[in-house]
Image 1 (cartoon, rainbow, N blue to C red):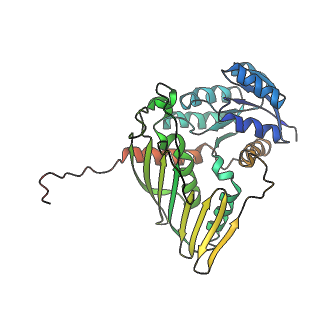
Image 2: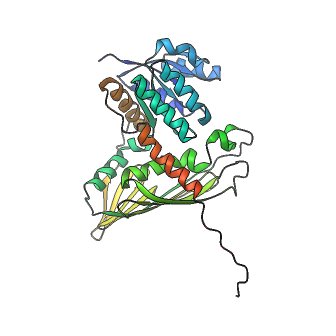
Image 3: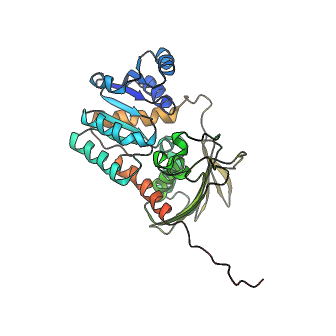
Amino acid sequence: MNKVRTAVVGLNMGLLHAHAYKLSEKSDLRWVVDLDETKASQVAAELGCKHTSDWKAILDDVDAISFATPHHMHAPMALEAIAAGKHVLLEKPLANSEEDCLKIIQAAEEKNVTLMLAYIVRFRASVQRLKKALDEEEYGKPFNAQCWIQGYMAPNPGSWFSQKDKLGGGVLFSHGCHYIDLLIWLLGDPVSVAGLGTRLGTEWMEGEGTHHGILQFKSGALAHLFTSWATKYKSPPALLHVHTTGGCFILGDDKLEVVTPEGRITLYEPPQSKVANSSALGEVEHFLDSIQTGQRPMTDGYEGMKSHRAIWAMYEHQGTPISWEGRQD
């Protein structure tokens, strides 16, 4: 098959996309685009492609575009690219509102182009091994999961990250959506959710900087997600624990283990010769395969919206106030 002519718009998160396109034999990386022309020039020189600060000027020279731009720009940029007949790989979120998400999905269907959401965590080899183990019930049925993402973001007041309308919410929507998507992919569609967030420690943000969310799935399984941009220290034993009727899966540092009454077993460990950005390469190649074969990507618009809808529902269900009036100690 002919190589897909590709471009990347936005060279922060988009750097992963650009390097993956360069590595892929299915891609002909033509352009990198950023408002910072110095950065764009440096990346273009490194990857052997052209650069510009005007993404609209490249439309006639590409087949597919990755957008890694501020969240409030996803909808207008994606819609314009799709209208021009381009395939689109969008960094999460799809858009900041359900209305805009549906507009993008419907536009892609009408133009018969591939639309994919960049949920890179799904493409980690350890995560795919865990998915297989859960689907095949290698160690019984899952009934509980705990996922935690501890991180620190330096205060940046006045930035688009600080503004709730541009970010789409807080840390749960911007970063936690990766792991809500992961939990849904592993455990099935949720039937009930709730969440609590706080700005303590991230007062520079309009949305929450720390969030705790809970989900119940159709199977009856429960999950809890803790995500934060305020934690100055992190040393978690794992990214994810999934408890099953036969043991407990432990996922951390791209290593997958299972603990059973018989002991602790390693199910996947990354090889020492692991290709840098292998998850990004897997994600990009899945996008390119979908373009070349016409098959629907596993993180298409509808699949991507599952996490968004769960998060929007969590924002609506912020807990029940407790009255301590008249309490006798």
